[in-house]
Length: 196
Image (cartoon, rainbow, N blue to C red; front, side):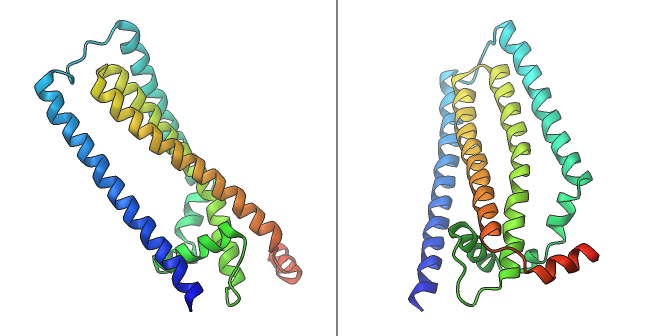
């Protein structure tokens, strides 16, 4: 019983940490906007190179985001994610499956089929991070167009969060691949899939 409650309490602590960090980030943004209005820190006069580069980066980021979304839909990855049986699971059950895949250690009573589906979903999710890269690129363009310390600070915070999310996404994909290698599909199931 203790083993099942330990991951849940760890998940609860992580959730509280994420909520607190989000509140802190929102407070920093609101404070920066209020202080920036009074001090003129939000009034920028970008040089010509910053205006040109900012406009180009905004267009590149927007194009990357749209191209990634179109590719995800056309390749079937978007539909596979939406039609997955994992979407019907309770969020805590889904987090538990992801933790087991990340650790490469399924619980004794775990459904290996669900764990394999979770691993495949984690591998597919890394491609969604390309949209995040597009968003961060557009944000950098916006920061250049505004050319103020306020927008530079906001971009730095968003870029840090974006880089962290992309890194975690690719790390999870590597762990999910390792899980699938360590727990392959049974041979009879593979042959049935090939004939079907």
